Length: 360
Image: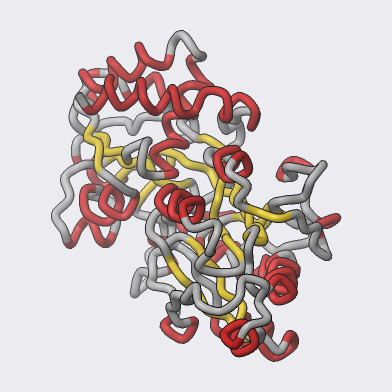
């Protein structure tokens, strides 16, 4: 997704690109050497506590290597292009906005992991074939800089409708829907809200109201947005940004000293529900290790650890949501959603239309 991680992934996890040498069945020289290594391919926001990864390595006997491949959209596209000689064994980070593209391109092989019965029903997908496993959920929403709106004696926007009002002209930055998963999620949120016939008119108004579009989340949030720690350093001048409902608690958790209240807020009426999945890559060299790793992603230890590392919500029964989330970044009450088949049928055409409408 994302990108939501506010700190770099631990160096101890390592970065690795596996070569494509050796026999494809994993029994060649390199396959034997790598049989105790599980390689995870993901987006730049993958993060997990060292102790949690170490516990998996100790109990399973596998060493985890991580290859990060940019924003979620970029990572998915690269995984599809390299699917015949994949870079790793497991892919994490394809979300509901891009899921059909991955499935239609045969990216994953079926696997129903241990613990899949603990996944809450609203997050399940591909139940007939089990090619992907839900791992986390988050809400893509407009965030606002509280200080800016207080200083300007302006009420922050609360809905999609508000964003096109004159008082919010030239205040919003969003991500490119063609290259960024939160950007695409925001586009789908407007399509869900205004329908097939209305979302383009909405974006015409948003463009006329001065929306700024940048390539990805990190540029939008850490450089352009005036409310984030990174944006303040970069002298960002946009007090509205497309990010996540869980971004405010991140601003609290990583501040030193921690503030009593989050410096940013969420426009609750601008949210779109995002679900991220993991899958066993179709030509994985280490399928046994890959399956063990996907099992691990559903364990209580990983699900409990995940929120304060990747700032997403767990998807399994009994997983703990940290108090920082409850206090500073609760899930949206009524986020926009869209059926996977509707996303699959319309996404590419909508992105083309959006590109010609907003970027040209």
